[in-house]
View (tube, rainbow, N blue to C red):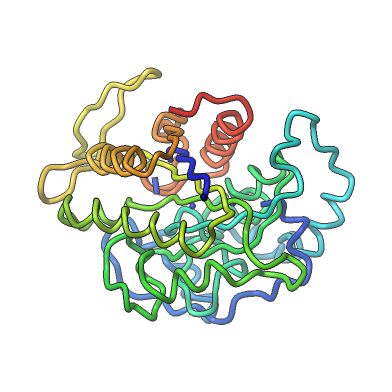
Length: 320
């Protein structure tokens, strides 16, 4: 019987050192999306396209492509990393991520998937939340089935990868980045639901889709530990609704139905309970307005906060 554990997140993984031999993702086809996904890119973009207003890079950044980490670089750096004794439960395990733009990075997602990162100050894969979690726990990346602009809801027969419950995405979750990764991942993290909220997908449809996703993952990966992350706050600094957090007030973005991400996070928790899953509330990871690039996508500091929070919950709890 699969162990399903829920880790809260929004917008799902990885010791980059273990990614040696991972083929860089083939050119990624992006499709136009609403505001949260305007940051999507493809690997075929020209330098002029890369310089679009919302993804501008300084001349200094453009002039230093050699500083971008590669899977091989990560292995050399990680070889000297000493895994703390308390991470023994996860050290050596492999991790798969199922997510949206928040978990993408060019070269580490399946062929044809849209991506957002590298983006603004987060330019190296070692800065992503999922690589940091793996470095801190001793895990390695099995696969990253994350799609920028992707949903939980959608057609189960989808072959593009845009929906987490589609047959393409579920199949890609099982395809390792390197041949020596094994037959299946040991741990699966899900960080998805942000775009379902943004597009005001019906709550009952979202709940059913998340339920289907957990059921499919349990069936396909019966030995894996499944960890669901609740979505991060979606911010709107101009027209957001004030929400009081333990560390201050955030201006939360609402969809056309007047709902914010907390409504969808409640459904994630309820679905987890139905499956007997644990929950880690990443929504309360402590990200503030200064931890985002655009109110949706974490910057370097935000990714660090998210990674540390998830790591702490994995190693010491609480799991609720």
